[in-house]
Image 1 (tube, helix red, strand yellow):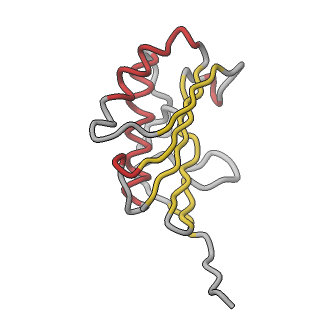
Image 2 (tube, rainbow, N blue to C red; image 1 turned 90 degrees about the horizontal axis):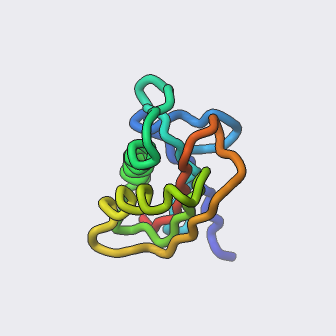
Amino acid sequence: MPEVISPEVVATNNAPQAIGPYSQAIKHNGLVFVSGQIPLNPATMTLVEGSTGEQTKQVMSNLKAILEAAGSSFSNVLKTTVFLRDMNDFDEMNKVYGEYFSSHNPARATVQVARLPKDVAVEIELVASY
């Protein structure tokens, strides 16, 4: 019978602590599933105000910290999902997002949603290998 490998919780103080009953990320069978990140400053747990671009920069910083804690990086990202409050902000988000993917471009879906946690402009989740 094959060995059963339990999922491993990933947690770091370099990204915002979960604000609900979920983990920052879960590692399992060579993949890391990173929960949706919003523009929270991990040191103060306060929202980064400002443009969608400024919020996206904080979100990407949070994702980077979680990937590093999981033993991964942006170069291992397979798929992202971007949630925008307003699709008119796509170009602004996309410009900042693109700065983090220089070696490859993962699969991605981008959708406009009615509302995001704490009424932020952007939330991003991802799946990567490690």
